[in-house]
Each structure stands twice: as C-alpha cells, then as structure tokens.
Image (cartoon, helix red, strand yellow):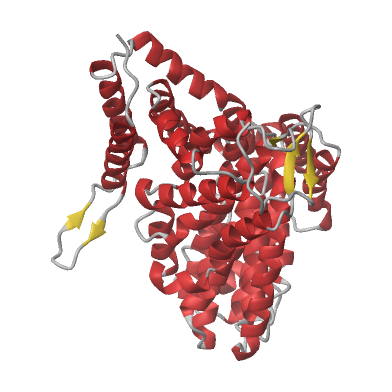
Length: 530
C-alpha cells in the first residue's frame, strides 16, 4: 500500500539530494591542501540524486516503477518546448556570429568606452555583449577579461570592475532570448518566452538603472585609457567579420516578432533566416551558411592572431588585413603577448553556436527534470509546499518564498539551472491553483520572473556554485571580493520583493490566459486562502 511521506522524510530526502549534488559538483581546495567535493559535471551527481530519491519512493513509499517512470516522462514533457528552443538558439547563435551580428554589436558597444566613465562603460559593454550572445559566462571570460586588463592598467580596484562586469553580463543573460535560463524559466513555470521577458523588465530595468547610477557615481576615479586594447579588439573583429549597420537587421527581426507577440519558436526561426540571408548576400556559400546551424562557427583568422610571437608577425598581419589594421592605429602599438592574448580571447568568444553546443544543457535539463519528476510522484515537494503555504497569506509572501527558495537552491544545490528547475517545480502548483481574494490567480510569468530575479542573479554570488567558481577563476577575483560590487545581482531580488510588497507590477492571469499588470493590488493586507 502506498504511503504519503511525512514532512520530516521529505525534508531529509531533499537535503540529502542537495548534499549529493553539492558534493559532486564543487571542488574546493582546503587550507590543508585536500579537496572537498568531486568537481564532476552536474549531470552525474544529479543522476545519483535521482536514483536515491527513486529508491526511497520504491522501497519505503511503495511507489510502482511504472508510476515513477510516468512522472519522469511528464516532467520532461513540460520542457520539450524549451529543449526545442534551446536547439534553435544554438542555430541562431552560430548564424548570428557568422553573419557578423554579434561582432557588430560588440564593436559598437566598445565605442562607448570612456576613461571618465569606465565603470559605467564596463557595465554597458557587458550588457551589450551578453544580450548579443545570451551567455554571461562567455561575456565574463572574453570581454570581461579584457576589461579587467584595462582596469589593472588604469590602477583601478579589480573587485569593483569585476562587480560591474558581472552585473552587466547577468542583466544581458537574463533579458536575452538567446539565454538558456531565459528559456528554461518560462518552460518550468508554464509561461511564454516573450511574455516572460516583458515581465522581467518591470523588476530588472529599475535595478539596472540603479546600478548604472552607482557606476556613474563611482567612475570619477577612472582616469586614463588603454586605447590600444580597444582598437585591437575592434580591428581583429573587422578582419574576421563584416562590420556594418546591416548586421542589426536580424536582432530587429527578433524584436519585431516579440513586439507582435509572435510565439518564440517562429520568432527565433525568423531571426535565423534573416542572418542566413545576410550571410549569403555577403558572399558565403549555401553550405557555409547552413553548416554553422549544426556545428557552430569557427573563426578563420582569429586563431592566427593568437599565435603571434613578435613584432614582425604583427606587421605581416597588418599588411595582410590592411582594411582592418590601418597604419598608425593604436592596435599596432600593443606588445606581441597582448596581441596574442586578445586574439585567443576573441577566438574563444566566437567559437560557439550550433545545435551541438546545446547538447550538454539539454542533458542537464533532462536529468534535473527526472529528479523533479521523482520528487513530484513521491509527493516530497507537495508535502514541503503544503507546510510552507500554510504560513503564506499574501502575494508578497509567496513571491518572497520563491525568491528565498531559489537563492537557497543556489547555495545547497550549487547549480544555476537547479535553482530554477527545483523551486519552479515546487511552486508551480501553488501558482496554478491558488485563487486570491480578488478571485484571480497569479500569472505564470510571476513565477518565471521570480525564479530569474533570484535563481539566475544570485548564482554567481555563491563561492561554491558553478557560476561563482567559473567567473571567479576567469576574472581572477575571489567571489567574496567582488560580491559587494555586484549591485545588479544582489539588488534585483530585493527590488523584486519590494515592488511586490508595495503592490507594483503584480501580474494576474485573466480569463483569456493573457497576463495583465495590476499596479493597484493591495498585497500588504492578508489574503485568505480560497
């Protein structure tokens, strides 16, 4: 006979699963020289956590394996649309890089660099690059590293620079339709991609403006400039890609589709076709324009720039690419090792995209959702959520619970994706069924927005989270050193909760399933359960 788990058992299973994942993912070197954690890809410990939860369900709760299997299939089915979108996003990234869209956006983004407004420029450049690539990791490890180098040359504190780089990178990653987390959050919560992006604007834009104001106020100490590095990055991109304003057409197509409320998949496909046409017009063959959709783009010339060892090699490159490296340009005045390093950074930035680039993410989603399916079938999450919801009487309390749960998932599960998937699965039922005193339900975008406000944004603030470990290593700044200056990341969940508590930008689910914003919702008063 089947049993229902107790709150104690449910909590123990969740904590042990979190411990398995945390120990498997982290690899922290202790003062003694020993290591804590296995440093494995998240997929492996997630698999073992899924097996553990399934064993408890089968042998203690007496769940039938066929029921467990249906739970896994049902959980994965929820994210089928997200998986399709992720594959299409891989195609989109590859085609946008090849057609020069990404390079053009970065090129003009670098134009805003100014010594006096260095921190603000670092923030805005990171925003532009992350919006173009949909990846905060890539932004941090490429343009971010270049900005850290410029900051060191100017004698500015590296933790402050790192904080603004991360703030901009995570804003762009959160808003960009190319981002995997931006696609994952609505898939888990049951909302639409572009509805989700629009909903995030209400909490994210105010936080960005506040962060930009802080950057502006802190920028007075930035005097001097390293024009050679900036010019070199721009020259190298001109040598590899066609930089022109025509490259803004594919992003404008995406924005047009979003404004017309076209579903995500047709919108992304339109962006892919626009970039393919741009590539063909510029002289590439049909095979060249199509193969990047599968395997991604591999730079043709940037790899050669990364092999530079002396001034003679730089002179030879300047002669070969005279249209990009003009005589007397600051780009030709940098040392050979700097030339090679920037060439290597740009090679890493633009070697990406294609369907194959999304396979690891898809695998992670499938395994993580398998764990979520087991948790749901065994009712572990239901029991915990029921206990939690008994104490949640207001909309602000519910949103605060989601924000706190996503942050705790980053701390205990050590993985940004899990901070979206696990709380998303936990709270989706509450958002789907809870009828408030005005007779309405909260729109699914309220859940997806809250998951990103906390889950996406706080992942880089945890030293043992995969995001914190990665960004700290590539920027060369300890997580706890840059944490106070990641204003965007730690302010965003606070702003989101404050706005909800004040009754601002509450999005209700209408009868036609279209969300509307009710800025007059009185969420400060207690709301009794239906």
